[in-house]
Length: 254
Image 1 (cartoon, rainbow, N blue to C red):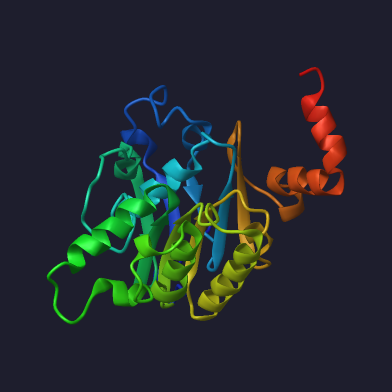
Image 2: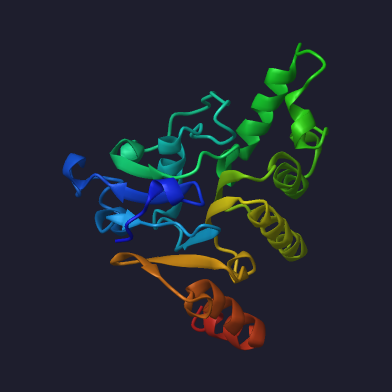
């Protein structure tokens, strides 16, 4: 396990650990998930850390817990947001310990699943507000007045200012492949502005970012893995190289 000198740290979130002695039972959700049951510590990359895994493997559960433990609203936004549409987050955050380094000037928890709720909250807060509106920090056009993909991209392009910690849960969900490549450029520009990201994703395009760590969820929890060894890359490459053959195999015996 890395030993950090916090005084010499050059990024914001140095280490995440599970207080295993406080967990009520590893037979109960979410602690029964392999990603949590085997979790001890994770040292995020100073720039970008990716978490990949199948649906239901727990990547969003872990990212949500990290976000809440940091002080973000469970449904997304900055630390200044304090709204609740439906209390669905797990108690995992209560059992995480975060080792912090530098204090970020900015931060955001971007959650595709509840982005609609965040967009609604921004409109509600701006009703009757003075000349300075929250939406001005998001590009000036209310997110509900844009397409799903446009609102996702506008948030990251306009609201993320750099020098921050950004937690992103499936940010590619509404983005075309071309927009995902544009997002890669945005991520790189923000990294150059001393930003740190932890991203849960299915996108082989985003995963291609060259200076990052990738952790894949398996039966034994998180495992650091090379880009070309991720199931996301392997399956996508196999399909693109032989779509007719892959479809024939999928439909075999149907």
